Image 1 (tube, one colour):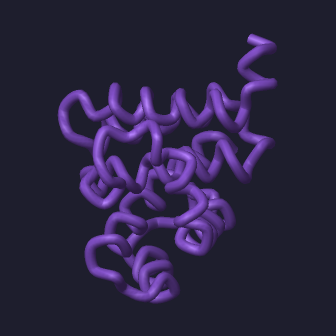
Image 2 (cartoon, rainbow, N blue to C red):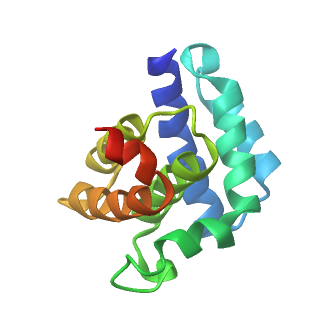
Image 3 (cartoon, rainbow, N blue to C red):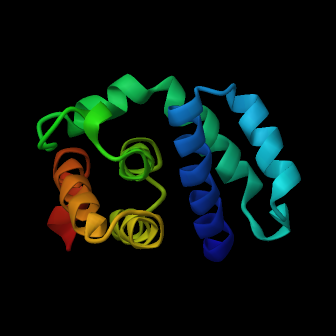
Length: 141
């Protein structure tokens, strides 16, 4: 399941990037990805959740990162922005996903899709978000 979920996150980064850049309809993007990618090894339900839920609560998600960013969220590289928003969404709305998994998955996404060293930036931002949203979980470590 975790590998299928990791793949769902990978596709979600790409789909959210496309949405951010082109402003395309989310359903159209979802359908396009279903046609262009082999979805058999992907947690399709999780992919759809990320793609549909993140844009609905984007302002709330961005508020969690506002004080942690060194620039306006819209000035952050679009790939990094998508990864930060996925990680923030999981920290805020998917308490069933352990904090360590959220951070590790986000760092791996940044290493795979982001610019050189972007994983450090993503890690720092999401670590700050985790301190705000998951302090009880952090204190157990």
